[in-house]
Length: 166
View 1 (cartoon, rainbow, N blue to C red):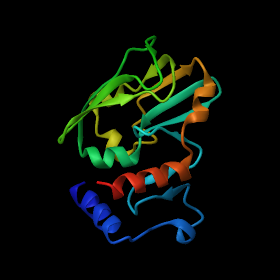
View 2: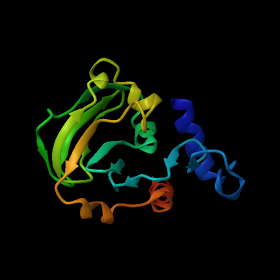
View 3: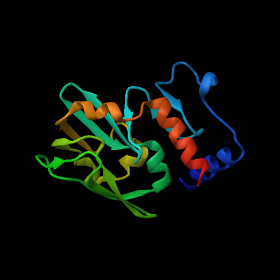
View 4: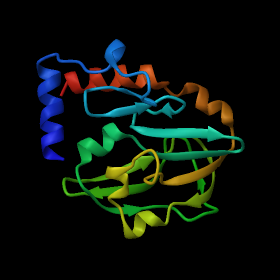
């Protein structure tokens, strides 16, 4: 993990870019800083959460970019099913070997399911942030809130700009 963060920082400092036109067309994602993935079909918040809206449910987790900066996740605090959450408000926390960080909701609504696997294996956030490492499923109160979130290209640029300033 430390090597990944070092390599990413070095690539940014040297203005080395991966992906773009050279990304193989069979990959289901675009590569944003050589080592961090940003998936098509998801929406992203400026606090590094992702959301996938399918039907009446939105699945929420933290991005590959975020987990890469956090380091090894050792504990996850999540709300209970049935809880109400507000867009931009904290719904839980992720504790890593480096720090504890709040996780903010990209959408308001009711929590309909919680990923209980994260209680036993919090590292799923590191190894599979977009699949096995999802955090909560929400029934959005106002699906139009998703319109204000970033798409993959916007989020990739956002991360590159943010990393350039750190």
